[in-house]
Image 1 (cartoon, rainbow, N blue to C red):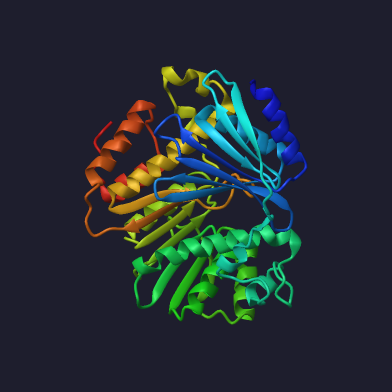
Image 2: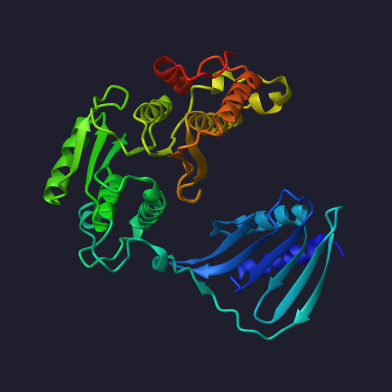
Length: 391
């Protein structure tokens, strides 16, 4: 039986928002996730959430539009051998063929499949319903603790950020914490970080740095209004900011282009225990990329930019490894909320066992793409003579 009839059935199910669960399994390649599960959920609206299992990790992706789910289904049909589609009244067993066709069987089953509440609130560090002073002042919550509808994505983002910070707490000092937040902007996350650590009875000093004087003045006034003693904002950039005290945590969220490299390099110079960076626009490497075998990618400006971003973040992570950090490039917030969704996390290690391999990886990437200049390497070579082999 061809793939078209079941594709039509599947399309009708999702257009009707029929409560369903889809399980695809038996990947054709060992490198693929063992299974992917798509479940209809409800928060403010009905949507589907995918759970993708890879090794010991679970990754989530949300889809609000039927068209997105159809693309997801077609992708899975080429990767997996079979699928199970459950509705209230039927169960479909679909078998994907290598030639793109499929066959399926149908079983009539009476079951109760309710739309699952997407109740992330139980897992949130900040709970809706409890008014939080800085969220109220920043216009994210009402005085009664209700999250304003148009600010719900920001509320999610802040909670995700605090989850990441929470995971880093075991690697920070037990005494007073000194934190630098570079490029803090309107400082939603800076205030959230201060609030979160104070909730845990930590003694902290946070300095938010930004180049815009009016934003710095506004944030200082808000910190004073909230009586957040220990939270200060200054005009300045991280490369030239003077510091005499040890720094425990360096945060750089959405610093543009090479400003992220400057923040990472300064964090390494300070020997910061933890580094959290969400890169923004990345333009430095794109014009330099050279690879005849990838000309089909590099001849398109938008693809060249995306490849340059991937290479830049990979180089940043490896260079942190070369300086004794265990790094992870992870999802910061769902792509549906922002395209700038990658976070680089660096944890300072006692045993620098991966240094040599990381140096080799940096050199290999630079040589492969013919890269001669790169800001972060330049900053660190100047100050630390990092030992990366000459290119």
